[in-house]
Length: 187
Image (cartoon, rainbow, N blue to C red):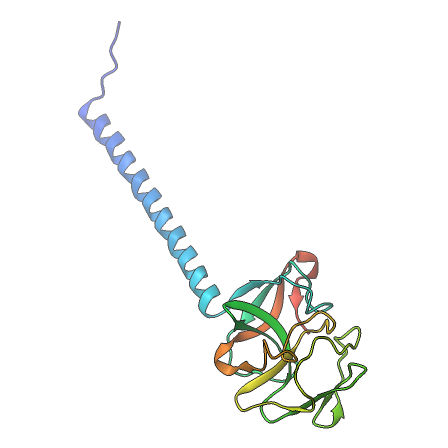
């Protein structure tokens, strides 16, 4: 019977190929970890990702959708924003900015600075939950926000939420990621 013995050359080749495999594996793991870290940093600091949890922004955004946010301080009327409120993230539409006067009529129609606001994104006007007095003047460095589903949205019409301070704004919601059937830019 013959014994298989590796010669010193064969042993060195096997050892060398094992070292090469370990180097390639280590390099691949480092590359994957680096890529994941970069993606996490981008998602946290440039393009945060959020899941819509309620129905207050319907029909524009629906429960369960995943959306991208763009961090910016250039917030305008009509923008959909994400902001911090009581350690939670809320998503609402900016209706008015500093010094604007908001009035909500008995039929739920919103007036901004004395003119009826054109709101094609609202399917049904509703007064909703409100415990502030109208007409209401938006304070400096604040934003008056409302959900598109006025009947169920708890927003700036409620003193518990109030107007959103600039420092609490995360950024604009601009893109639906999932479900793939509704993927696209938010108009």
